[in-house]
Image (cartoon, rainbow, N blue to C red; front, side, top):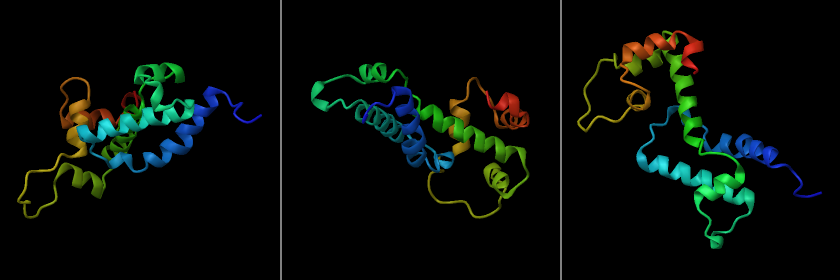
Length: 146
């Protein structure tokens, strides 16, 4: 009975065992374009391995996604984890929130400022939203998780 697992169960196992390891700590990542490309390539590679499709068959990524009956969703998973983590930080008074808001005094670094997770999330959020609006919407969990 080897290999008789349903496709649905195989996909759930991949998400539970492989993605959980690959995306550990993704709540704190600030992905650049190169990182996003690599994650999406990793996702397709996993689905190819799951369906046992060799590279020599020259199947496109879209064909692989149709075979697995899914869409690209690894970056959506990363974004939802980051949004959930950010909401937790914004709802509580903590050192993390103080650091996120940049209220810690000190000497300014000499290089170009790093892209922060908050900047990245504000950029991908629908519409033009500023930090104050984001902070207010995080107070309502039901709206925040949508």
